Amino acid sequence: VFIIVLTVLFMFTSSAVFAKEKPDATNIISDLLLLRPLGSCALVIGTGVFIVSLPLALITSSTKQTAQVLVADPFKYTFQRPLGEMESGL
Image 1 (cartoon, rainbow, N blue to C red):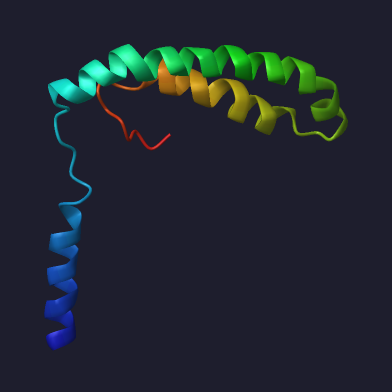
Image 2: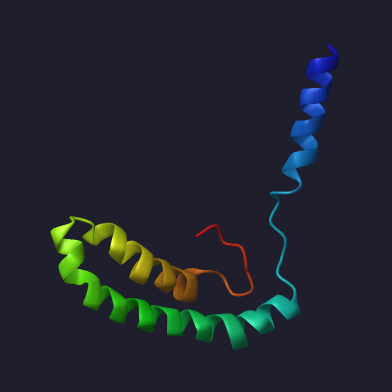
């Protein structure tokens, strides 16, 4: 009985950690002025690195993984993440 109560207690207390909160003004401003421009730079640089590394990625059959890391992830972080949400799980 003690283990069941303890398990239920941990389940309810740990779920509060994963609850989504509304982003505050500081997060939105810093996201808009700092993180989005850095994400755009990462997207441009990643695209350039992807183009340069494309021959090697084709030889090693890792084109999809390379494109995901260098192009798709920065794109999603910059343009698809809600404004002010710093930890999107991307």
